[in-house]
Every structure is written in C-alpha cells, then in structure tokens.
Image (tube, rainbow, N blue to C red; front, side):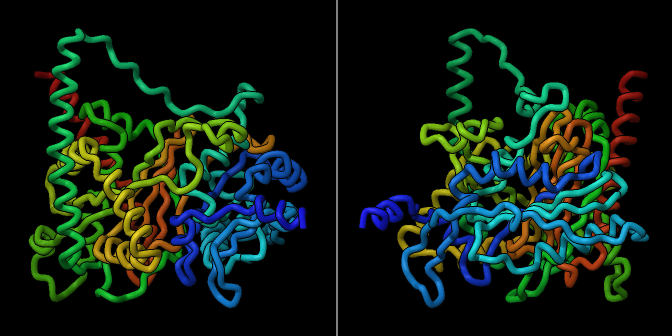
Length: 480
C-alpha cells in the first residue's frame, strides 16, 4: 500500500501545452543536429547521458497521454531508463558518394518515423559520417512535450563544456550594459517607453485578432489551398560566416536579427519572382509579387533569464529559467516585393521588428492560448493554432548559440543545427549561431517547395548582395 502511494506521489501531471503537443496525429518534435570535429565514441556519449540528461525528471519518465484504450488523466510516470535503448548507431557505408545528401535523407526519415511512446520521448542517433562540415554527426530528436526549444537547447548545452575551460559551461554573447543616465531623464524615457508600449500593444494585438477572423495569406508557391494538410518532410541546412551578417549590420546600424529577417524576405521575394516567371499565365511577375500578402510566425522566449544554467539549477523549483513550454508568438507581415534596392528588405525588417519589440503581443498570445486551454480545452486550442498556422506562410526563429568553441562529452563541436517537425507549415526556417558561424535550417513540405536547396541558395545570395551594397554605401559615405 505504501509503495503504491509513493509511486502515485512521484507521478506528475502533464502541463496543458504538453498535452497539446501530444494529441493523436499532432505530435511535435524538436530535431537537433550536432556536427563534431572528431569521430563520436558511442560509449562516451552513453556514459555522459547517464550522468546528465536522464537526471532530469522529464527524460526519465513515460508520458501517459490519456488517449486510446487506457483513458485517464495525462501524467508523467517515472521509469528506469536504459540509455543504450535511446542511442542508435546505424551501420553506414563508408564509401557513400554524397554524405551531405545522405545526412539530409537520414534526418528526414528519422524525424518522420514514429516514436515509441512506451519509453521516455528522446533519442540520439550517432552517425559515423564525414560531411562537408563535420567528421561525424549526432542527430537528436525530442518530443515537444518535454519542453520548448529554449528549455531543450539549454539542457543540451548544459551537457557541454568550453574547449578552453573543460569545467566551464558555454556562454552567449554578453549583453551590452546601459549607460548611466540622469534620474529625471531616465524617468521621462521610461514614461515615454511605457506610452509607446501601450500604443504598439493595442495596435499589434488588434491586428492579430483581426487576422485570425479573416481569410489568411494570398495563395502562392509558398502556400497551399485552404484545407490542405501540411507537414515538413525534408530537412536541410547550410552554413555561412557570421561576419557577413555583422558587416551589413554595422554598415546600416541595425541588429543581427534585422539583417537576418531582411535576408530571408529578400530570398523569398526572389524565389517567388522566379517561379512566377516560369508560370506562362503570369504576364508581369514583378507586379504580381507586389499584390500578394504573406505573414510569418515568430516565437519569442518569455523567460526572464536567457542564459544557460547548470542542470541542477534548471530543475530547481526556484529557478528563474522555467522548464517546459514558455513561449509566445507574434504575427509578422512579410515584405515580399520586387525591390531594386536590396537593402530595403533590411529597412522594412527593422521597422517591423521594432514595432513588435515595443508590444506585449508575445505575452498576449501566450495568455490567449492558456486561457483558451483552461476554458475550452485542448481541442479548441488545436483549432486556434490550426487557424493561425493555416493562415500564415512560414515560421521563423533566430537562436543565439554559444560564443566560444564547446565540446559534447569530449567531442569538439563544429556546428549545431536546430529544427522542428509537426507544425502545420510548408516552410520552417530557423537560424542558429555558433561561434563565428550561422547555420540556416530549412524544414519544408516538398509538395509545396520542391526545391529547398535553391530557396536556401537565394537567401544566401541575398546576403551577399546586401554585403556588396552595404560596402558601396560605406565607400560613398567616406568619399562625401
């Protein structure tokens, strides 16, 4: 009797958002690819996971969803984890002609394969595969019920250490310290900031509510007809120098995020322009492009502390870094136009992002989903999310990674690429930084975007054009 009571006390309820991400047919996964500079040693990785990852309750528990025959309240049931069952080492032909293509196909097939719900919902695939950017590769899959991208990435990076200091956790780029200001002037600035925040919150929230009530984006080559089922079935990534983005950022006095979003808008505009040009029924692709209306969904981390914390701190009840799914979203209008000045895409990105930063739309969206879940249940939230994602064109996210070289259980990391599966979007674009690199990750539905590599190339080419235009701008300014 006492043992039964103890087991019941150890069980934990499943959060509403975790229930949402585990509905039948709507499972959402996070996919993380880690490129290593050396060949991975499975025994070292397994031993490392035993000492770190499975110490977290979510990674050593089985999710009982309450669906199917054994209906009941959803809960997490602790179980004994055999780490070897979660680490897969496939046999790979060492003489593969195209390792990069093999990695893409392997990741796509792995991501789409069903996950065994009778075990904790995570797994690592260790590939003895030499690619263009790594000597070996580890591909991890985590069910979204375990936590959102920030939680999982923080926990994963808590398993890593700096190369220069093997006992130290990785760090992000240190935030700039604000300069000391006069007390009176600070109060006036704070008051003006409050007024702007209230104004932009009212405007942006009203736009978001109106968007959900009316027909969504224009049907183009990036979207499908209403009612069609969308799912990402192809995962690719490319790596570019972070300095290229910083050069444009410094020349235009903007942020890295402004440049990245502008680069994406420029690449998408060129992609649509080219595909419209191949369409015989389109007389003027440039004019057709100016008439379309597209929106993207951007996720915001709502945690007050965005630094990586040690595994023990992350599990502590008083930790500022809340575990689980703590994210909000905003709707971003995409500037997909035929611009002669390539830098105009960056200016438009800055204008849009500045408005969103001054609004509380992410908190409103999080509260709306939570309130809907509490009052109407998971089915209502599922319908609301389908409405949001069904009316938009893409999902965009920019993830800031470690600023210094790190190792994963003794394996020096070359790059980290993150993506998602299960969100009903034809295009999911996540950009991850790592030291001096930017990893562009595309997850696409091939029925909508059959040529993801070409789309990715156009986005990267847009950055090269911006870099050239920015350098000309600097030269012209210096001459004047």
